[in-house]
Amino acid sequence: MEWKLFADLAEIAGDRVVAVDTDPGETVGDALGDLLEAHPGLRDRVLDDGEVADHINVLRNGSNVHHDDGMETRLEAGDELALFPPVSGG
Amino acid sequence: MSLSLDATQLDRYSRHIIMDEVGPEGQKRLLESSALVLGAGGLGAPVIQYLAAAGVGTLGIVDDDVVERSNLQRQVIHGDADVGEPKVESAARFVDRLNPDIDVETHEARLDVDNAHELIGGYDVVVDCADNFRTRYVVNDAARIEGVPVAHGAIYKFEGQATTLVLDGPCYRCLFPEAPEPGTVPDCATTGVLGVLPGTLGCIQATEAVKLLLDAGDPLAGRLLFYDAMDMTFETVPYQRNPDCPVCGEGGIETIEGVDYTGGCRIDAD
Image (cartoon, rainbow over all chains, first blue to last red; front, top):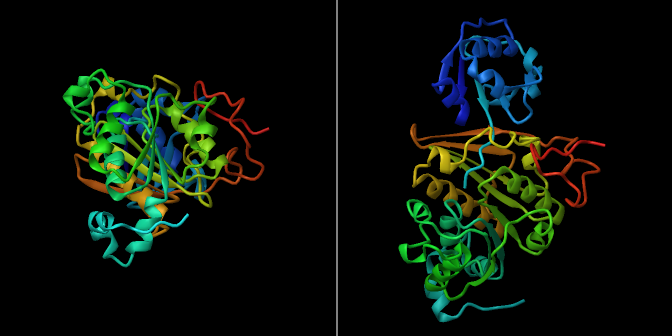
């Protein structure tokens, strides 16, 4: 499974695309756990009281996981995951 | 208000007028329209250029900064001789040189809780070219309450985000209910920004503003457009209205007075 990271999240992780060893059948939450384990620097940036911060969107195949089962959404082979925060530069 | 195009205008706007999608009626409509551009910086520069060139008759420009030399690498309406001048004055001079049809309304101010309703109300469209989260949430909230659509754009180093906030679509808070805490995401002065990046994003915002004013095409509503200059890719992510949104949801706020825009700009549901 791969995570695509945007803006400052990619900088913290040091890469825009991060592969994790999460298997189909596991959840988006599992994949996020694996991402944060591989890049602990992201933990404080992404989590707020143990939950994904409200301003960070979690996408599976280009659609917010809110529309599925949130972090409990089951992964399928070939799913693309993404994390994006807002940016404010002008 | 009725106005007919004079010979100079028929010439100036001929490439618009010749198209069925704009035509003389559409051009008149643009000349009778008003747009408020928030920020005359990286994004605001191309927005002001193209809206002025297109003949958007009334152009409001809000900015409280002065031109600095480090702006000139991307803020293409300002020149070396403008360093030290208020950006709204420099922008107004640019528009005057480009197109005498345009009435420029300069507001040398920072858009905030105390002036947002007054500044935004009455314009046909707002183009959000701000450079900080606080202003962006103030703009979203006040514009929605005033019934004015927003062409939003924001940049970070080599990346941009654009979306259009129409009245029957989701607002910025539906996408990002709160801002990151101040200091979490570094700004342009800290990270740097590719000079041409705001040119690309600002042109997308200007395109959306012109479409809204013409009531033409499909706006970038309920969709966030990502642009990555390094990969040269565009991606679109759909998003929906949040029925519990404190601004555009049922029973949303009717004024931004009293909203606390410090920190994450969150509005808690009652």
